[in-house]
Structure formats: structure tokens, C-alpha cells
Length: 208
Image 1: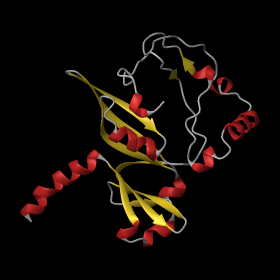
Image 2: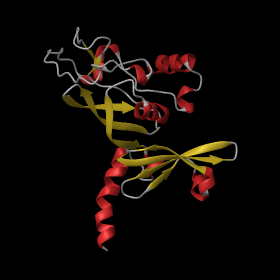
Image 3: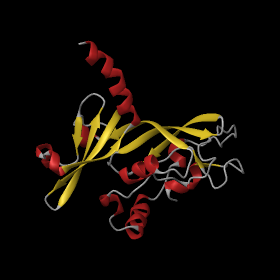
Image 4: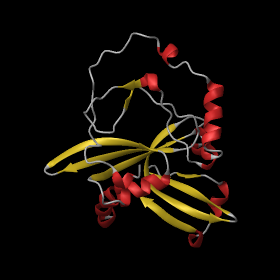
């Protein structure tokens, strides 16, 4: 479903008190890995490699929601079977005079941009955290960092995304992008938090 068509009640976060069967987690998660991989390969030959994979869910992990959110599903856990970065997006849902906080876990940059630009819903992005794998952030482990902006760098026969973080680091999908000049670089997303940080810095600069 396109992000622009998100229903107005999509941001509701429900905590259900339904008691679940006392079954060990490892037993609940039991699955046929070979069958899953084969199904993924048949469904989308290069989706994971091309950056179109998403979070993986299992029927046994679904928590019934009844009519609480029409068309919605609730899960005890999701699996993320790839090592691509994704976004933890904090939002405010504007519903008349009421403001509610909610969070989206967004996989692709394209969906993040669509969410930021769309006016078809009542969701306002407050801040975005980049969840990056170890090979991208250089630590060898997953990290979550405040994201300020994303740029697209044109390279020969390809392009690279560059993630600029609050701590002034820049994470490059392709190391060749490090040597790119301004003519090759196009900013595709700026977090609202970047504006907040600029506003905080201006008085200090003026008093220097």
C-alpha cells in the first residue's frame, strides 16, 4: 500500500492483554529456512539484492486485533533477513486537536521520501534514526544513529547514497562517493531534526 494512502487511524498503537500460549520462543519460530529462501527467490528474483526486501513476519507471531484498526495486523516480532540499512521514524499523528506519537520502521529511502512529502495523511515526521549494519558504519555491529540528511551521488554507471549523521559522520554505500564533488551530489532527504540543530547553533555563532 502506498504510504500516501495510509488510513487516518494507522498511527494508533495498541497494547493487547490477550494471553498467548506458553510456548518456547524457539519452538514458535521453527520454520523451513530452505522453503522460505526458495519462496523469496521465486517471488522476487533480485528483491533482496536490489534493496526491495522488507521485514519478515510469521503467522504464529500474529496477535489478533479484531476491529481495533481496520486492515491492520499486530505481530509479536518481525525478522529482518538482510543487512541493508533501514529507518526508525518518529512521527506525530495530527487528528484534529489531538496529537499522538507513533513510530514507523521504514525500509527504503524511496518510502521515507514519500512519507515526508505526502500530504494525503496526517503524519508529521519529527526525527529519523538510521539503523545501519556493521559493514556500513564500520563498527562490525548494527548501530542506531540520528540521521540529518541523505544525499545521492552520481557515479560512473551507478549511484551511491550518503547518510549524514548528527555526530558529523558520513556513511557511504560506495567508497567512490567520498571523492565526489558538489556537481555529482544531490540531497534527497533532510530530517526536521537538522533544522532544529541549525536553530540551536545560530545563537552560539552570533555571540562568537
